Image 1 (cartoon, rainbow, N blue to C red):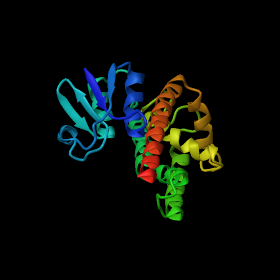
Image 2: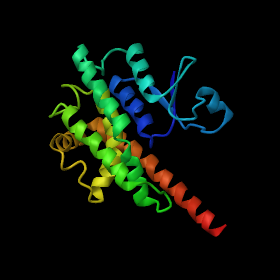
Image 3: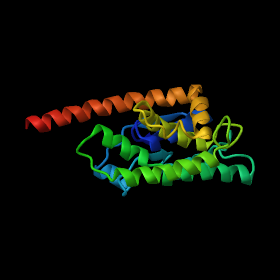
Length: 219
């Protein structure tokens, strides 16, 4: 039994979900009880996702992905050679460390109470996206000829990044490799499945958040 504690709306949860689907693993998604003593025992950092596999408990999405690759090596989503695995990991690390500004910028456009240094967030994001536009394979999948953990990281991130595009932001469209990748990966069945799950979770979150805002304003 493989249980993943988290919400499909989280890009970190969805990368593991996408990996499991790509590998044909039966993975049960269980809503994370954040803040509860039970969840804190699983992950004292208090973040999702957390994986449970036959009694073994593991937090941190990237570590979970590596664990699943080691435990279920076929099909490999890391690549067949050291060079291929390095390219996959480079894309994953770039997204994780340098492209997170998408979430802050998106939240700021929807929540006036959320204050950020927009110029600094944009500068950091541009740096990450410029690097990503170099590191991507160029055509097809992100880092190799087949789907890899690089795609499993990028696809959930793009669910939110493309929201900026719909608001007139050209961060994705003005970078040639990135633009080609978005068009290619958006046409993949697995991408549509993940984005569908994320959209459902995101809409549910917005409904709860708006209800909370109304309650706070009426209180």
